[in-house]
Image 1 (cartoon, rainbow, N blue to C red):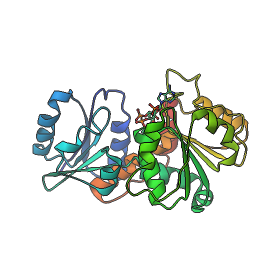
Image 2: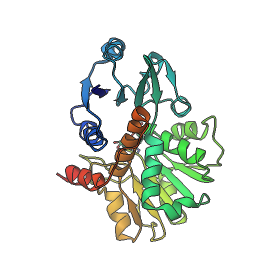
Image 3: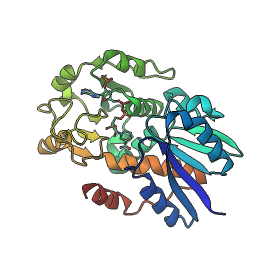
Image 4: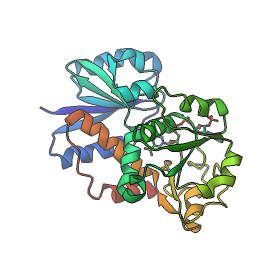
Length: 279
Ligand code: NAP
């Protein structure tokens, strides 16, 4: 039977998910199709019912529906429930169940590149930003046992809301972006999750980089451009770099795993995706 997959959101026309999931299907020898559904908010409920009737295996959810879809679903897994956002839905015997793969996808992509550093749960981590993606990443780092995760964000209350996640076990300090800039040299891992530096504002960085040193891993989840200003400056200072497109690939891979119970072979997809993004 042909497996139906898709993406709902608005706008969705520039999404890379159809490219990624079509490759996953092909590599896994699964006959299927990944379709993009650009829907307006007042159509959301009806469209979900139509997708259910189409016997869709599962679909991804992007802006602006990651939170709005929650009351329309039949259930949530624990991660999506705690984060309060869904980016993957699985149709399990007619019930639509929501998941969030951002945090696990992020952590897997980082572990793949820097397994030794990530094996040490005592590393000092700085999370820059406190939006939806940061929330998912903080949750998973916390669940995975990392002991020290500070958050720097423009708006204090958004950072506070992340540290108040129900299952939070770590002690975290909340910093201004200015304070964090001064302390960059004291972190083993710096994770940038704001929109600052994203196309078409490539000339911007959310923090000053002068204190970054060569003992640090600097990770930016922005993938357009692949080389953000922050990553360029960090590389110039000798830091180890982690690019955002790898998170994109691994969070998609985890969605696929939820739908089919098997991981797709990623092989050279990291390089291919990078080339695609660099045009
Ligand atoms: P979001 O929920 O809207 O959060 C945006 C974050 O950026 C907030 O912390 C916000 O701070 C901060 N911010 C926005 N404009 C700012 C400015 N001018 N100065 C300082 N801080 C600013 O967005 P999101 O969904 O978390 O996504 C954030 C980024 O991650 C986007 O670039 C997105 O493309 C990328 N992303 C990548 C992947 C991947 O797979 N690689 C996955 C998800 C997201 P306040 O709290 O002060 O508003």
